[in-house]
Amino acid sequence: MFRPATLFIAARSSRSKHGATFTTFIQRFSLFGIALGVMALIVVISVMNGFEGQLKSRILGAVPHLSVSNPDPQQGLADWQQQVATLPPLRALAQPLPYVRSQGVIQHQGKLQAVMIQGIDQRHGGAGPALTDSLIRGQWESLEAGEYQLIIGQALAMQLGVQVGQKIRLIAAAGGIYTPFGLMPAQRQFTVAGIFALGSQVDEHLVLTNITDAARLLRLPAGHVSGVQWFLNDAFDAPQLAKQLAPHTTLKVSDWRSEYGELFAAVGMEKRMMWLMLGLIIAVAAFNSISAMMMVVGDKRHDIAVLQTMGMNQRRIQRMFLLLGTINGVVGTLLGLILGVLLSLYLNDLMQLLGIHLLPGTEQGLPIIIQPQQVAVIVVSALLLTLLATWYPASRAAHIQPAEALRYD
Image (cartoon, rainbow, N blue to C red; front, side, top):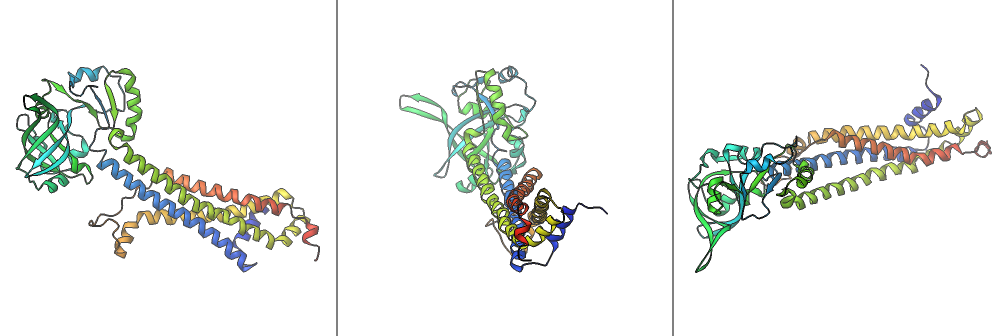
């Protein structure tokens, strides 16, 4: 079968076991360096994707992704259905959920804990899908108007030492009234009707009750709510939707970044730094092939001169060494791709086999999400870096003068 001479010679040279032993070692070393860098980057980025995904589900699954409220929190919103109807229709928005919210303090047997009080309406979807599925004790249907029932997080229940059925005192930051004795905060006894567990810091600070009971506690006018919230399919779409809604309403439009923006910004920065550091490993391995290729060029000077005397021009000589470097880069990248994907898929099994627990106090393994787009970027970047590193040695090989190389033959 016909094959171009440049490709045939490059393929033979990449498999050849002849020549200087040290040159062959350096060439193989650069190949395995590329494979190791690609493998490490795929594994680490997949684990970080998993942690980011868990943050999105455990934290952003409990807080509203997008909300509109009255700029004056003491006034609230009257007739929220009509207020929502005046907003421009956006396809990405889910069902609107009214809420009543205020900061407060929860008290039980001399223990105090700052919390976020949120009143929800079960008739309009409740607290969102993540919280709905995280209830471990009690029932959401117990949050009936006038019963003053409360559902709290598991971590908060453990801190206060409270169980389902016990009474606790809830003190709200808003809704206080002035009396001759000073400001009297809004407070009332509630009964713990359920406990949820998201496995995040939300469990320590969020308490939920019926929206009517929360409005009475905050002394809001009848029919008023604090605002309307949405839970989106992708919480990261909320900032863009907030920009689209803001020009069309006088209400305050906010998204989850007001509470957890710094946390996810830190996670994003850490992820970019990992990309940079592990990407440098690939770059070092790729540019290490420059020294390997230069040694190959020096080792093959005689053969290059013979090929030139047989009629092979400089462009084909350069193409031949570009193909030789590319073959090594492709083999190293594919090897790293296969090892990286396999190690990511079976990392938890491997750690379990070795008895390694990276998450103390739990049998849960590392969260791992392999994103094909990121893997493709890693593979293409490694190949481009290898091709770039091969360019200079290939150019030097093309400019070897046959008379100089064969002078002493």
